[in-house]
View 1 (tube, rainbow, N blue to C red):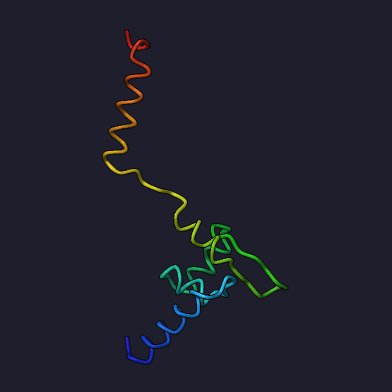
View 2 (cartoon, helix red, strand yellow):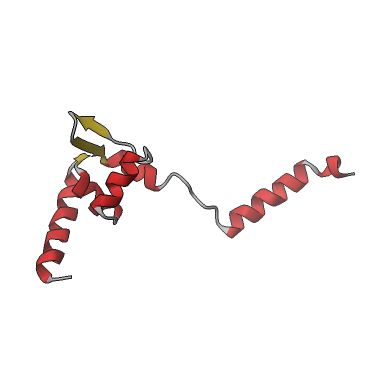
Length: 95
């Protein structure tokens, strides 16, 4: 990646920080994926988005953040705690 490309990426990321409505390129930079991948996710209706007219696709930054955090994987300690709670609450059913 050239210095110019890096500077463009940094500028894009800085502008994303202050904008609530993003275009495809900005959404791609925020998500760390290509614009083509963003378009594919839109076509597959996997990514929350808005259409202004036939061609203009926009995204809310907050919805992209929520989308990124949609599937949280619990820690090992959380899993063990849930398992212990389940066993304690359902102990009488196993007899």
